[in-house]
Amino acid sequence: MFRRAFWFSAGAAAGVWATTKVNRKLKQLTPESLAAQAANKALEAGHRLKDFALDVRDNMALREAELGEALGLRAADGGSRPAALEPGRATARPIAAADHRHGTTHRSNEKYVDTYSYNRNEDH
Image 1 (cartoon, helix red, strand yellow):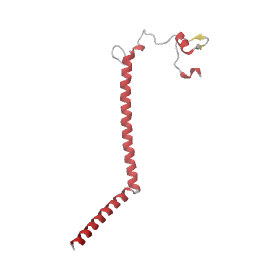
Image 2 (cartoon, rainbow, N blue to C red):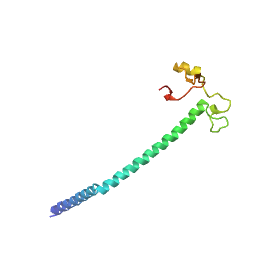
Image 3 (tube, one colour):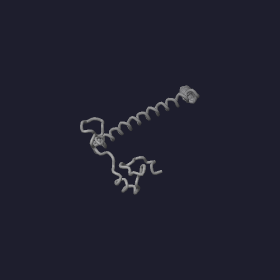
Image 4 (cartoon, rainbow, N blue to C red):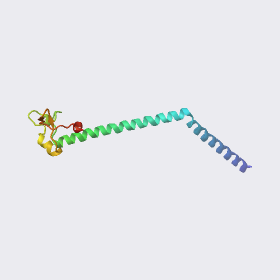
């Protein structure tokens, strides 16, 4: 008698457990639940992308500052104006330096241009 009662209660417990699991899975697969899950995943991905973009921007600014210091592009007074743009400093390259690099002479109104142009589309 106890044996039958044991197996009956074990079967009833397994049935309740299986029914509960199936009902949970069915609720997860409803269209509303799937839409909510997709929205949550999209929000998580957006937050991760935003964090990544902020990290990239911070590291980019840090690297730019390091390069600016290494190349001497920072103003002596600590301002934001680069040292290359201070008055009295040459900022343009002579045409001879450009000719040696590119093998061409740049002309403007039949006069030689005295600065090197950084326009990539100029030769095309």
